[in-house]
Length: 164
Image 1 (spheres, rainbow, N blue to C red):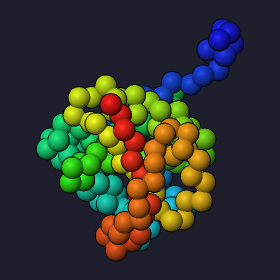
Image 2 (cartoon, helix red, strand yellow; image 1 turned 120 degrees about the vertical axis):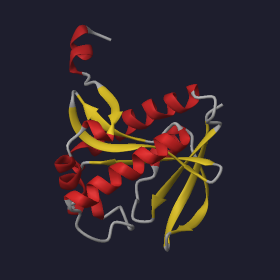
Image 3 (tube, rainbow, N blue to C red; image 1 turned 60 degrees about the horizontal axis):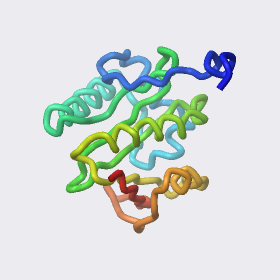
Image 4 (cartoon, one colour; image 1 turned 180 degrees about the vertical axis):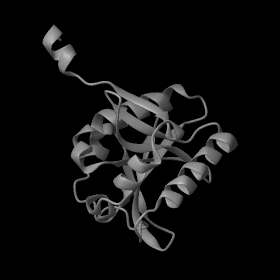
């Protein structure tokens, strides 16, 4: 890789959700392009909604020792995502700001590397809404379709990726 390519590559960092402003999260979650692929997102978010969301995600860190992060690209908030225990599964979710959808593969690869290094995580699951038509990312990272499942009254495609 040339020096130019190294300089052009941005830094992706995972930080705690408490490290970003609630206003950034509210703005992100109220973008209608985000709602298109989040069937469980049924209303506009307020400052209180964002505060409750961050609090609940912090509870998973306390309970499971792992949770969701705010994701930064060169220090700028681009979305949130991370791991959450769902029964026996470590489910990975990622919600990017629409202008940053192109960072998805880099972020997923970094998260999978994290999961592969964590002795607790033998596999990762992904739940994708039926609205997601481009599923190439799942095959590119090696995830296999398991089945459609119902979660909170909505149907999702469930994928599984072995990390060990």
